[in-house]
Length: 390
Image (cartoon, rainbow, N blue to C red; front, side, top):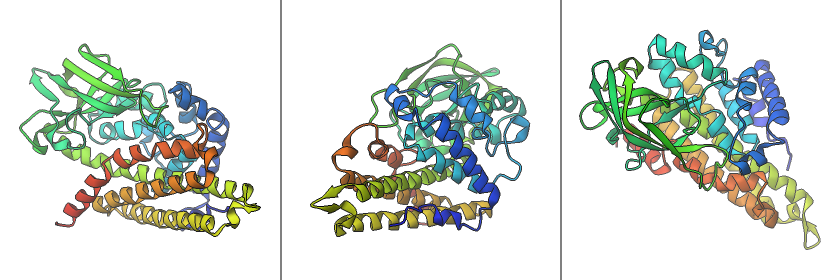
């Protein structure tokens, strides 16, 4: 089988020379600044702080954000984001994306819905890689049931008093701010607001969740709010209309995850093919056994289908016709493809694939977090069914 796994993307008519130059630029950056160290960072459970300014300098952190805040928006389309997700995933350390790029879900609510003063305060230092912002939605008792969250924010003059907790918050130990979902009104989605909470506010505390199956390099936290006073000026959007802010965020998050999972799948394919052409059993290469060739062919088949689905969804987004149901099902397609490819690659690699330090071993451990995070497979299917009137 040819090792030209990039052929489908290179033939994408939506991508021109400028997109391929962006890929080349990013690949050089990751080859020098990340690839040699990623496995050690994962074992240590930390991304070094100095990586953020370096990522900012290459244009990764500011991609798609307004230039007035230090971003790069002129001529930027969805295809640049797809390329960024793919090149991040090529490293084979999923927690790197979850940590380095966590502003990708924490900052858009601020950029899209906060006041100008809040944007000016938060966006420039985040996009320079000097400060960090996370997203606080999930709660210990609520999971993905966003409409029934219980963290409260009660108005007291020109402040809100926040009480409650959030958990499984990526980047939560490092964050200077958290774009947080709170209940300011009655039950259900109509009582939810979004509030930017500074982590140096009195009454805020956090504990690290450091016993994860995967994403070791990403700091993950449980956040606690004990009578935390937050200025009303930090409201993101309109009071009791935060559910719209949250839903607006999900499409981008799920597209990024789908693109990453497709790229992780391709890493598994590449590793499996490389091993199958080198390893010999029963007097011939693994690749000369029909059962192995069929595994590889099935992996490529599922990757092609997922890649085509991603392209269709990105084209719809670029045309202004994003369909949340289609994007939800894309995330399911991508997580199922990743799981299949990780499993088959592990079977082909055998014992060597089971040893820590390799990309496939890390990806195999990170299948479940991708199938759950950003909306579980079950919730995605149900969302899509409701989207289509069922």
